[in-house]
Length: 297
Ligand SMILES: [Zn+2]
Image 1 (spheres, helix red, strand yellow):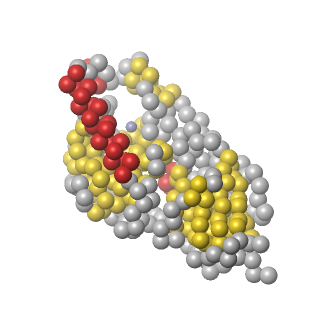
Image 2 (tube, helix red, strand yellow):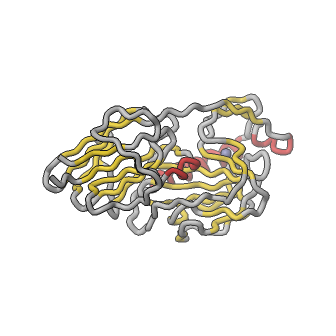
Image 3 (cartoon, helix red, strand yellow):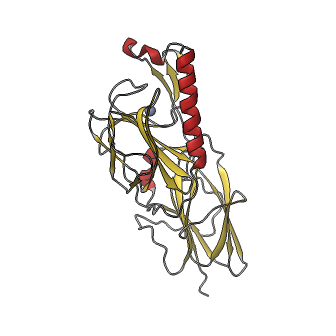
């Protein structure tokens, strides 16, 4: 029987065989490890799994996960259920299952008032504008649907912040009311910095869209493979084009105030197979949550 170790990032462990605290370990699979799961076990969180060559298949909540380069990602939506199970089937036929719970987030309500100069963003759009908005939404949806595991993308376990420093004016998940009209929850984070601040790719990827849309303003969407994509909106300038390859930290655009924006800021969003994730939680990608080791006895 392999040894299961799980670290609680959230005090919500359901069941563990043995608990060990790991602090600031690099995300490296040791010779004795079968499996590591790192990142943020909470709503809006992203987790990176690494498996040894002993592992044949991985199932998350009983559904198969695509492994590429001995790694895979798991993401939790804004309102994701809290209890999960991960299962590994080893090449020798042995099966290991581990239940775990993720932490629930608390979301606030945010009221936003757009100035009169931006009234086109809160007044009812005319037929022509409605057609444009619908068409842009369709292209975004279709592009995100096409984002699939891509082994050409050499995504690494170190994520970059989209901008260095800056004040976060709007967190992930807030329920939004814009000019007194309830809207969908905020599906990214807003970082305030001056216009022209360089905006960087959070990881390696391929530019899947680069354009100027009504709500987004100028924006860049990057496909990172593994079902993971990131979007950078309200830019003043796009510096990459469709199909460009980017590396972690590459400058892809400049911060701006285009589209439905209340002032200079970057809206940075992450999508994982249709789930919206919280970019702030990428800071915890180094934290080991579950480690499964070979039994040496
Ligand atoms: Zn935003």
